[in-house]
Image (cartoon, rainbow, N blue to C red):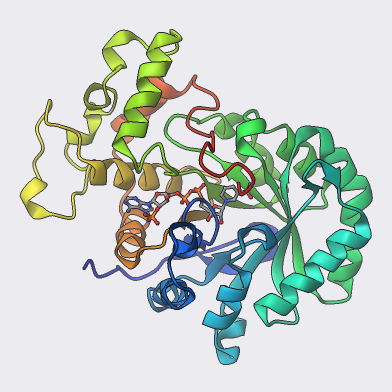
Length: 345
Ligand SMILES: NC(=O)c1ccc[n+]([C@@H]2O[C@H](COP(=O)([O-])OP(=O)(O)OC[C@H]3O[C@@H](n4cnc5c(N)ncnc54)[C@H](OP(=O)(O)O)[C@@H]3O)[C@@H](O)[C@H]2O)c1
């Protein structure tokens, strides 16, 4: 098993919260392993392993069904050292939630998390057409809850597959009501660099990164299928249609960081190593200016440790970052689809 390096911390924008640069996501497809049928005890173990490795930022949501697991995993004496982020849906199965419903949802989260206050409470997966409602109708009710001490900071998350150009976050950040946002950004979906990060940095908004790896960079078959499709739609040249060529820079010195020493020294043309891809994808997200916390979801303690190592590793070499931008910088919305679980973004 890899021994995690010492955790690094940063300040989450104007919240002033000191947070680990690696954050444990309790949603996605893994949901701490619940998505694959793991026991509650196993999932509690994943949370404990994250805390033991120095992670102090935990992101969950009412919708994920993992709040109670986080609540059970945390000892009361640890509560003040951990930053808990959770969420309420705005649009539940086609019906907009009322202010009373989102406040009731917050109170339910507090109960499940066994705490009197969450540090960040987000409106979850807000579609562009609902962001005005979120700002004008829901946020004021939640700001009263903040004033009553039941939440520390208001946040908002986008629905990446349905909002690949970040319309929700653009409006939300400009409203000045949200101290934290959660945004999708990865090697082949880089447009937050121009559309979101300049705004978050100008407004001092804390920025949580999702989709750094997801399935596109954790499942080699998925990556290959995406590349084949991009070539078919003339969005990538044919010579980048194979994963080994599209990501051939992973063989450059200082780029890949295989955990298995026998795989070090990959040469150009070697078959692509899945571990090198996830490593590079996490490092790419982590070192993008404007990113505070890189979230990752997992049900595996081994993956947890590997991911922390990647997030704490050096940036990819500048020439490689430039190549990634040149090759993939024009792509928008790649690899964001959630064909497995549609309602749990
Ligand atoms: N709109 C929203 O609010 C929203 C949407 C999406 C995500 N999120 C948040 O962001 C967090 C991260 O989600 P994400 O969308 O970025 O996806 P993710 O859940 O981090 O996806 C990573 C996937 O790759 C696997 N994996 C992780 N580490 C690996 C490794 N080292 N090697 C191979 N496979 C690995 C995981 O499964 P294993 O269990 O096998 O490790 C998981 O299926 C979520 O948990 C959630 O907190 C929020």
